[in-house]
Image (tube, one colour):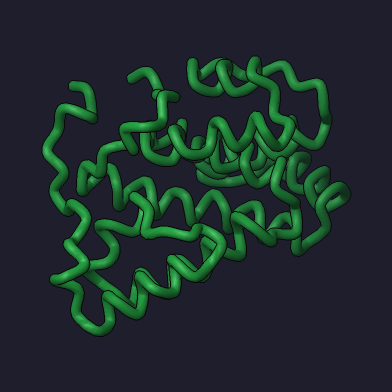
Length: 189
């Protein structure tokens, strides 16, 4: 079934209904680099303390991680594809291409094909995230390569991105959050 045809179980709360904690969380998101309340936080706003902590973690991982925007966006795409998370895909596929991930790589990920990467760092990020999600572990060889290329903080941030976007994916898939209508990139089933 097309996820956009499913009812949104936890739609955006009208601002007039926000309690003090929900308002404080929303205002922090709006004042931050996102500039608005966005889909990933609509269901989570029902638990304002969780939402506040999660959005702060996400702000760091998305905008300031040790691996940089290009590799962060790639990791987000691999994670959103794993969970078939339409909101994250619709938001991040265009950003990933703007940050330098090729359209061919984005399409291969969307189609569940292993991309042919022109850059070794992208192949490594893909391998770490894929192994983490698919195999529930990272092989020793991949781990050593990741440490050599990204350093310990970079590897921790990369795993953090996969974990954070998995949490958002589970939250939005469970609550059936629809992708923003103005974004056209969709994942096949």
